[in-house]
Image 1 (tube, rainbow, N blue to C red):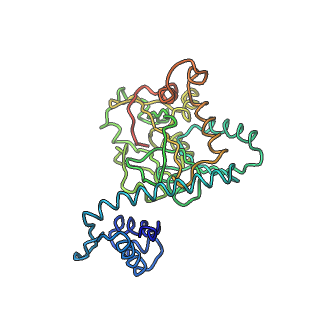
Image 2 (tube, rainbow, N blue to C red):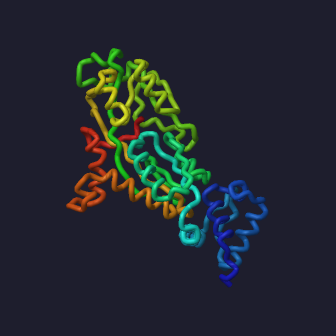
Image 3 (cartoon, helix red, strand yellow):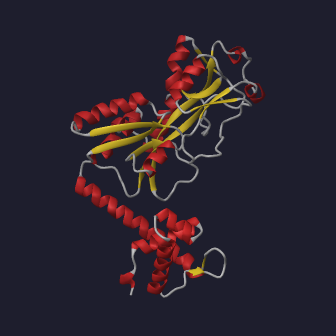
Length: 330
């Protein structure tokens, strides 16, 4: 009897539960509502179970349905992993490597690794998209990128596989010509609130309503970190910036690091992310190994002690962060 069970039916079950109705599931799966209803009925017939209580206005899972849903999600995950693994075996080396990279990521490290990748796979085409907030995830969802290097959200979709890569040291900074540059340290929150804060904004809706780290009463928003840096240098306001991006300006005396009462630095986490059904091919896996090696401290690179995760954490701290606190503020 179970031979008639299909992955398509399981996807319909998951979509109805996640989207709350047969019609919404149809819109997600690009199927008619009647096709969704027939698919669920066929699944119930195959299993010999009623999966939904249809007496209510919206479909409600029965106790049996709740149990089957858990197995259905796992079966779909396993099927996607199987499909992705088979594709990697068949293709060996992906014809193109497309990266979605968080703007906070240290590009000098990435360019060094990509130079090495080019020598290893000279025929490989590479595309690099720098993204803010939900932009990297959106690229992966739309199949516009194979690998992501960006910050994790509070809750990850089951569609993604993630692993920590490194931490980027972040510090609050301001132009030396800005009034905050002469404020007495440590600077309290009430002082910062009175000055314009320059923040990065998301082009997508994935982080709609997110306001972590935004404390200013007056906000100027930017979708590009290079533009924000120019406005920062011009004295329009203050913001948190990656240490590796502003260190040369601090050394030249055009920017000043702010010492705040809350903390004067934190670590911004960067993860490797890919879709479960699209694991990295040989070239992508090679690039990740090279990035990990370059981001690890000397002891980890030579194998002289220290575990890998500790080495990754050290990479961010070595950049100059004075605090181990993590924050999502940008």
